[in-house]
Image (tube, rainbow, N blue to C red):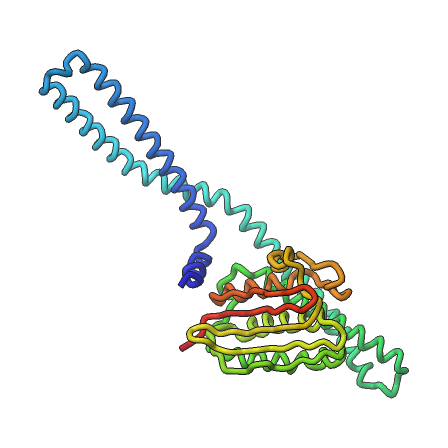
Length: 328
């Protein structure tokens, strides 16, 4: 229930939220000004009738006048609320417009840059794939170099996909929701990343595999689970193990990815989900990323009304858990 409320709050546009904030501030100022005016008016009235305090009729007239003034003040405040709402909207629009223009330019730049980068990457991958499959025509050393180039090209493609997704994190059209089984999603990720795990001598297997259906974007969820499994493989030690679990419990669906790597220091657990934050030190195993994968995972999870968290013990490994609302 709390996550659903948070999700609804995130759906409100920044302009509306800023308008409400400005309106709240202006209403508080208006209320404070009205209280001060009424207090000063009361002091003046009671000072004027000080010599006649023993006369009930004068006291009643003064009280009646103050009540009338309070009603007039409330009526004036009611009319002023319209002006407050208009002023709040104008202020919010003036504040948000430069930010919206900057965000729009950033998205346009990201789209253009990503498109321009995809073309040479596609050419590189086509040529390296052809060279790799023609193993007899080139030496083993050259084939190995071609394989490295192909792997790095794949890595750049994933980075471009992450940049594109992060550039549109505020767009409602970023998600294409439909009933999606997380068991199928995780199965596809494990199948695709199995060669990478085998190449590094890492055991990749399912620890628990049960159906868990959610209303979500299958492509984005595959990207989320793929990032978690890829990180587990990347940061696991030689001949390590990575386990994937999928299950449903009541109205929640879970995906868990665990490794037996060096783990994450306690002070880094909250920071690893910050954009562009990279984990340095021996636990990176010389494979520090760009600081985009985990922030993207958290955004995808929260966009689906869920959350992704981590438990880690230095020297024993890390476990990332995705929790999403499940379909009945």
